[in-house]
Image (cartoon, rainbow, N blue to C red; front, side, top):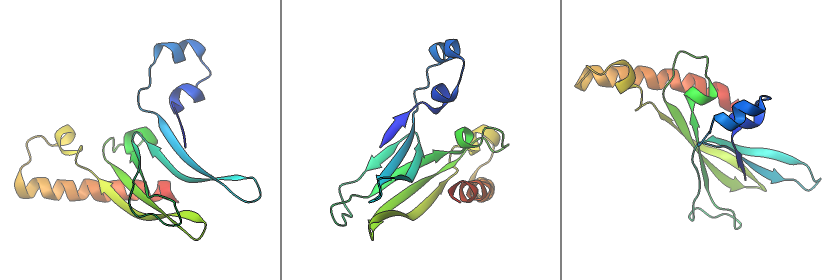
Length: 138
């Protein structure tokens, strides 16, 4: 697993790196193949969890998170994201499940919504988040 500030490491302005603390690292999980090359198994923004259950051949389940406002800074949907579950099978990890998150959208855009109106807005933001997440996964 590799974790570092994508913003700071990708910036060529050394003084900006010193002034801007990025406290949420971007993370990559890599797997080394028999030929010595590495492949990206999972990528996450913020939290990454290695779970003690669902072991397969000694490999644990991995969960990563994607925050859309960081992955798609120019998209109008500046909320939501996804949590990915990765499981090991047949000498490699595969994406086992994707859970779309849109719960941080409502306070930002529609603080006055309640009950059914909020559920409809949530469903719409979840749909829009899924479009972006699917684009990112591919």
